[in-house]
Length: 630
Image 1: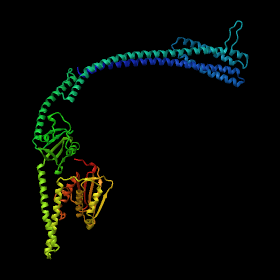
Image 2: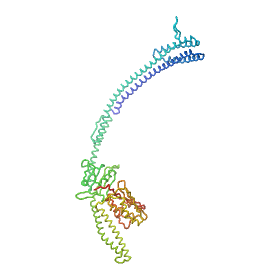
Image 3: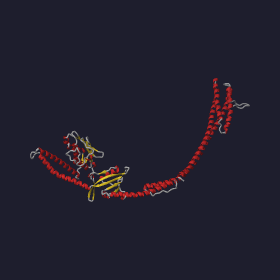
Image 4: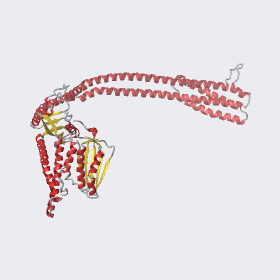
């Protein structure tokens, strides 16, 4: 038996019983209502006729009384007209009652008795108006004559009026009683119908309960078993869970299909599990083959994969080697890049030794350049992040060696070069004798080259000092004071070149955390560049503003020749000089020194320029309140 057939067999008797109850109840109510309506309509017509008949009868009696009290022919005529008019109304209502006699047997007798009384009353009325006005005979006709020897008392018109009214009132009473009886019958019929309907509904309710129990047992029980099995698979992955097969109907087919699905899923999981284990082992072996520390994080920041180098240096343990651990806490230098990669999918790659992370390993300090890359799926959702630490210890030592070599050579060259410079100056002053024009020209050229070499050596020594760790001489400084001191240092040169220097700084800015000497050196280099490439009549603006990230921005803006977009990424490189517009006396180290100074303060410097419109250098520095003691 199919599920559809079982549902039809369970619900069809209920539908049939409800239809039978509806037909019987409707028929009974229709019959009762029709019968009650007929009875009420007939009795109401008789009651209304008797009311109007009594009203006409009273008006006829009033015409007799008016005739008795009237004087003059005009009054008599009015009484006569009223008599005739009300007799027409009386006869009309009597005719209605004769045609509407109800089922009560006494009503027919009363109507039959009413007809001769009417005729006699009419005849007496005609005789009353035939008597002369004001005569004793007319009074006797109305009030009646007393009894005498050998005759009975005459009731007169008044007596006849009273008898007719008694009969009409009796007819009125009978019809009222019939209406009350019809009302009681309707009430009893309604009560009987309600009892029958209540009993029928009780039977239907019992049938509904039985059908519901049957459906719950035969339909909902298999569905509940499938639901519980599906929930167990969803929550705990228990694919071995099967559901019992209840018969061969649609629910049995559902249970069989569900069991077949779980069997296929078990087989699929077994095959995929082997592939996953193989892929995981391959991935782990690949990561382990890297000599540099490599970490793979999940979206929550827990370590999923870590090669031995990462485990040794960072002390992490991948999730595959034990129970899932807490979220990995990266070193301070990696905390923000890791957060950016996991949350905002932003990559980070260190591009300088100043961004290197140092760890103590084997009794020595080793430097690593970090790279943090987000891992995404095809839909762009974050799967985690990869952290790679490139070992640059040897390269950093080489860079340090190069820096020390440059510093040593520069220092060793500066002493003899200073002597040569002094000798050239002495010769040019002709302190040891006069010079020929050719000698003077050669000495002037030697002096300029000596000055240029000394400037280059000074900047190389300054760059070497910046790259060498030294004492922390940072202190809080007002941004406006830094700009004013830098502007005063170049005020004379700016006046000679007819370039205006303007300072725009708010006095309410917070203090910056800087080494004043080094920051002034960086600002002087920026101002030197601005004055070099700003033509006469131009303007250099120094400004200080608070940024949205809580730092202070010092900017140097000029109205000079500007820099092409292709050269902007290289302006901070050492010895870089813009082709075709660089100062022939320049060294290409000024902006590199600016970058080293700003990076040493934990800030950053950027360049914005457009050819023909000028250049803006922006230096972002931390405020004093943001300083952290290492």
